[in-house]
Amino acid sequence: MPAFAIYRLPYEDRATLIRQNVGEPLELFSCQELSGQQGFVMAPFQVTASQPILLIRPDEVERVECRTEAVGVKGPVMARPSQRDTYSIDFANYHAQLELGTFRKIVLARCADEETAEPIDPMELFQRACERYPRMFIALVSTEKSGCWLTATPEILLQSEGDKWRTIALAGTMKLEEDQLNSEGETVAWSTKNIQEQRIVSTYITECLEQFTGVFQEEGPRTVRAANLVHLRSDFTFSLPGDAQLGDLLHALHPTPAVCGLPKREVFNFIVRNEHTPRRYYSGFMGPLGAETHLYVSLRCMNIEGCHYHLYAGGGLLKDSVELQEWQETEAKLETMRSLLVCKP
Image 1 (tube, helix red, strand yellow):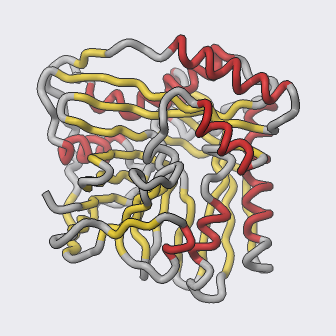
Image 2 (spheres, one colour):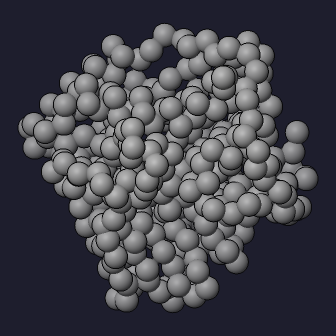
């Protein structure tokens, strides 16, 4: 099957389908190589020979309608054994580094595997995600190298708006309950831990932008909703002198402390060596690159393999993090993808 990507931007009612008809997507091995490129990019958390940055060439581009009616799901979902024990081991290992002062923040990710009695068409899952999550960037990407991935993410990594650019600092997570589900989360009271986590990300992005431009503006933080969760978000708008530095800026930003931690390089190396489940394309980034750039951090991911679904989520740990609370946060995040597999009454 030819490589393709279909994506829908937040609040839009149409999606864009990109197909590469001949050959395989271009394989790149650093973000810097993305300068001057066009197409749909899919980048992993860690770039390797077996897991490169993939650029789908836009041989065909088509705008398609998103279905708006609610849909049900056929067949039961069969949950496979949880990762509770391995998560506990990872948490203890990660948290010890925070208590020692080695790291200021570190993100711990996990993968939950589930199955259905019969395979669900990935395009059907994409439509369900579009219907359920109008506030998020929804994308379905399939290549021979990466396999098939679905994501529903609220986090902009880099976006162009004419001659202006935008990125955001998104961190802190709380689950909406009861009457809050009828709102945008305006009444949520944020904990000190969540506020600190968001400020760490904002400060990092500020330091990155200062390397490339002296003209940028920060607004926020404010509470934003994503599915049944809310996060703290700050928006950064800035100018760039052309796109020659685009790859360098992406290299500086990715992975952000929202999916990695600080100090960035030391935490990144620790995660790669110690996390039980390789992240693959989870917590990388994806989206269209070119005349209009909309790159999003690949959160709330599902890797689809027939009847098998590998669901990914993570959470930021600070020194005062509590294991049970962090586990529950990942469960809430996994529900974004898991709910697409569950039968409606």
